[in-house]
Image 1 (cartoon, rainbow, N blue to C red):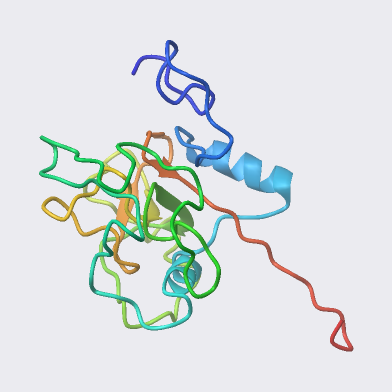
Image 2: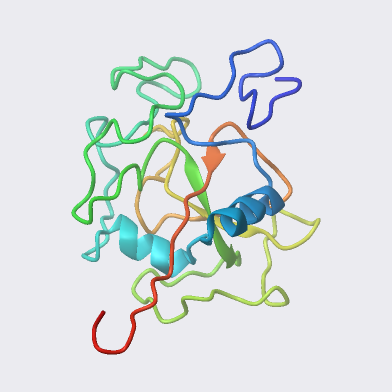
Length: 196
């Protein structure tokens, strides 16, 4: 929609952003500025996967509509909305995972801090920093390095994509915002000596 932004996610003539929904339509620089302002950062791909899998085994299966906001019906023809939503859902309206985290594998895709390259080994968490900018390569983005996006969105349907799996990933142009792409913050805690 013309004029869509994080303030007006449905365009200039649409309603304002709702405070209970994920913030969307942001570019990488916007996400980084917000993270700095809040004293947090975007998670690495490995951190995001660990959190999405709740520290356990990653699932190869796509979750059902009772645990994640997705497209129900034949994409892109009919969205039945049987989970109660045909677009972005309010944050936290589905059950949290075992770590108490909401919407890790549904609602909007989430940008991570890592650069994207096509190869990915879902059996290892060895490289929490991801590739360097020079090693990043996304054949679908000739403009420059992409960032890794995780988690599936309300536009994912079982007949079209399998992005809800915690190990699913894709590259995203860091300058591009969209109605189904957001982010989350992580915070590094400092533990003082003596266990405090």
